[in-house]
Amino acid sequence: FSNYFKIKKSNFKGRKILETGCGPGKHAVVLSLMGANVTAVDLSLDNIQKGEKLKKFYNLSNLSFIQHDLMKPLDYKNKFDLISSHNWIQHTENPSTVLKNLVSGLKEGGRLYISTYHANTFRFFITQIARIMLKSEYYELMYNLVKFHFPTGFKEFKNPEDIYFENIFDDFFVPYCHTTTYDIVINDAKKLGLVPITEIPDLKQLYSLDNIFLRIGLEKKEYKDFTKRR
Image (cartoon, rainbow, N blue to C red; front, side, top):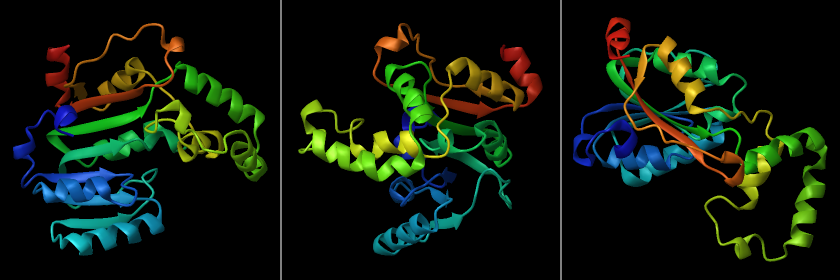
């Protein structure tokens, strides 16, 4: 968060943050413990309930949870200083619509952090092929085949951050799995008055890479400021 919001760790205190796709609330809790005033949003009621338990455990008065589908606009009573979208927007029906809904809740000068799947890597090349071949009813069959062919799981690959059952199978079977590029994200962001504040990596030979995430920090500017900067 510090790297992509371009804010020192000591300066999160008092910031008004929207943590989207919050899951069971781990990131939201960390931001709250750093002193931010956090609103955490997720589509899953089960995740919201898990988050509420964490909130109670840490006795956090500066954290609240909301169940909401961000394909629809959120009723923003007040705008946020910072909005986080960490590794979930790619699984929505229309990420561009979600992005627009998020930006509508961002203050002028506010910052947005996005992490999502980068297109054209080997993993997502295989993923798109698998998604064409596999049907949802094959899930149990595939689950049992993995246990047969990999009786000890995927430990032998020594990459627990990326190669584990839920991570791979989610991408094969979830309803949506979009990938994108920095050029596409920056172009969409430009239309919404956002400018990059983090360095854009020079990526080459993506097909030889197993997997990389697209991660970018953006700042909301008035459009006239944006055109001057460009």
